[in-house]
Length: 65
Image (cartoon, rainbow, N blue to C red; front, side, top):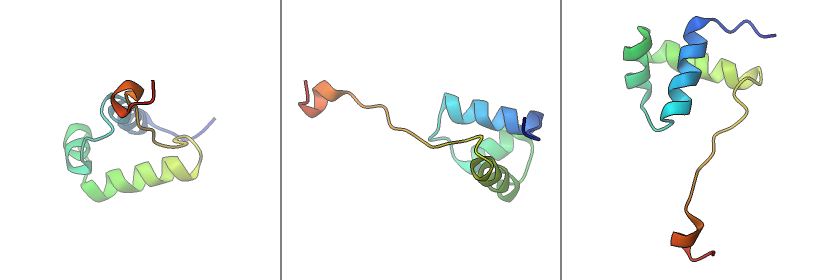
């Protein structure tokens, strides 16, 4: 169990919904500064809550089947 709080959970939800959203957008939504949001995301990565970021692609548009 981690020490993730409600804001951490909200940030994770925002990342899941749209990983391209800017830190500034996320900060405005959760009510923190951009720097605080960056620190939280970095901490969540460091403690293994966020394990990576992925890209979803369309293989047919790439000619891969």
